[in-house]
Image (cartoon, rainbow, N blue to C red):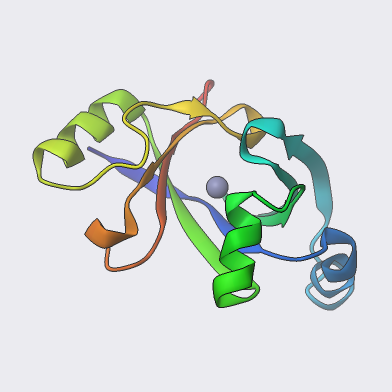
Length: 136
Ligand code: ZN
């Protein structure tokens, strides 16, 4: 497997609207996309930092995994997403090396990415996402 870069860092927030001023006015980043991913019951906001993005994740429902995360651990860094050129191959490879997968195959994520999560039990408690961009 080849990881090309950190695609994004996912940060769980209670309210995107409340956090926007920090990212825009203090850090000087520009939010260029706000998108709801129904499948994951989250609203996402994106900022570019070089090739890497910051992805704010706001739960849209109480049974969203993000809502549960915030309830348990509070707001903060939720996951790290690594970009790879071949997600299917990468998943097979890490599974063959004994890594537990949350997603056995890729599923649609925000921004047209195909994504899959690895289980934190296998990744030193850091929720890890692998993703592939359609026009990588
Ligand atoms: Zn993500």
